[in-house]
Length: 139
Image (tube, helix red, strand yellow):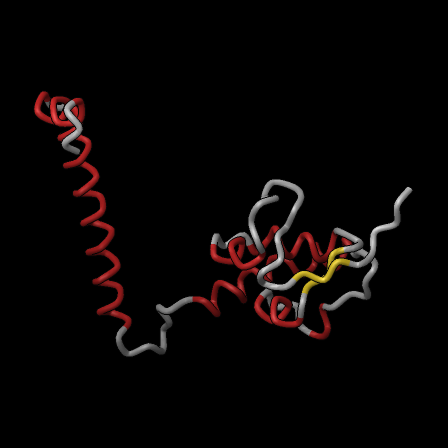
């Protein structure tokens, strides 16, 4: 049997296993898969993260566990609080922001425009002209 060494992952490290083998840590963060990364840290014995990743995932000094090792109880106790802290940290729409009403209006307008453009595109694709254009390579 081969004994794996401790693997310290940075933002650019490829995961290499599980559901996301081709993605790196930074891409999982961009996909907002915080819970999966936190789960890797607490439930896998030979996986550790760099200080930058730990800081981003809100793994503070009191939440750090000795590696190699795993701690299911600490994962259960802290995962919800950590994900909430990350989401709060990433929110641009904050109650103390004076431009929050303008931001809210802009977000609603973008959402509405996306819905309308999708409906128009779907109707255009179903029409005779849309099918003709698609078949003739105009779209």
